[in-house]
Amino acid sequence: LSADDLAQLVGVSRRTLSRNASETGWPTPEELIEWGRLLRASMTRWRESASLVALAHASGFTAPPALHSAAARLLDEDVVLPGALTPLGVSAALRRRLAELGS
Image (spheres, rainbow, N blue to C red):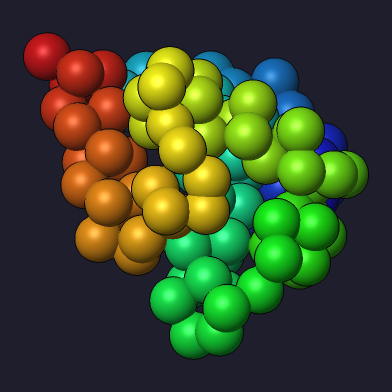
């Protein structure tokens, strides 16, 4: 899923989607997609003990380095995978990010 795909799904242009996200205090569409992927990875890990390769691909990342890069950027620079991928941890980090953007 790309930002263009997301814009098409909601029926607006990518520019409008980006502008609306900014105006309402939400992350960029690209960042929202990454958050969704991290949440999906955390749920997959929670349900089953999958390898990092399986988690990355099931969550829409190209490979484990892309999953690790997104987790490091969005969760914590010192993130240790797969241990850091818990649904509660990812959702708490997303809530903190939304609070940052809203303040």
